[in-house]
Amino acid sequence: MRKWIIAALVATLVVGCKSTETQAPAQIDEPAATVASVGGTGGTGGAGGTSTSGIQTTPVSGTANGLSPALKDPRNILSKRIVYFDYDSFAVKDEFRPVVEAHARYLQANKAARVALQGHADERGSREYNIALGQKRADAVKKLMQLLGAPDMQVETVSFGKEKPKAEGHDESAWAQNRRVEITYVGE
Image (cartoon, rainbow, N blue to C red; front, side, top):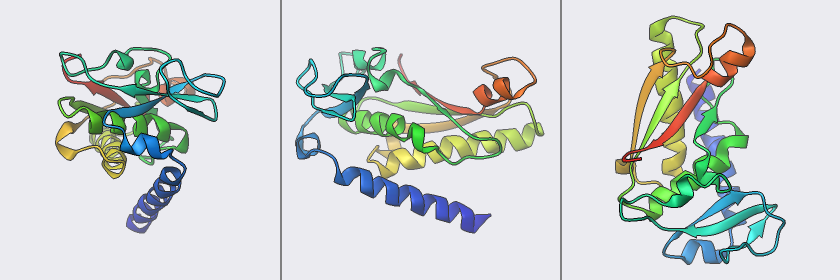
């Protein structure tokens, strides 16, 4: 099991290295973070960002309370706050990597922002097992954020196990919604 975890972390690191090679140099040198928005048709975005594969990028900076309106803009990837997991797994799926990366960049550019990663599990398994699994899920998202540049002091993790289900029900569709990490910003 331990070798599998190490292999998963190495794979995440390799994928992370490959994805940063394709970043535009302007994104790295900008003082404010550049965050991708879902949608768009390519070309330049309305806020002067560039698009890669249909994802708009726009500069993000905080407001007086330290949080950006982009966090609530449904067209911005920062409004996506849930990372879902497979059954009995705490490996971050590739499809949620852009969400985690966008939040890591946001935290890196907004030093006053703080985030809580809330780990959850479905109803199957004991209370103790699900608390541990929810914590592993939250820690996996935190580790990925740190690898992508988010400062450790801005990210906290907590596990609710199966105690706060998103969906009521006793079938796979409900369970799939409950296997998650929610990204919540302090002060929102």
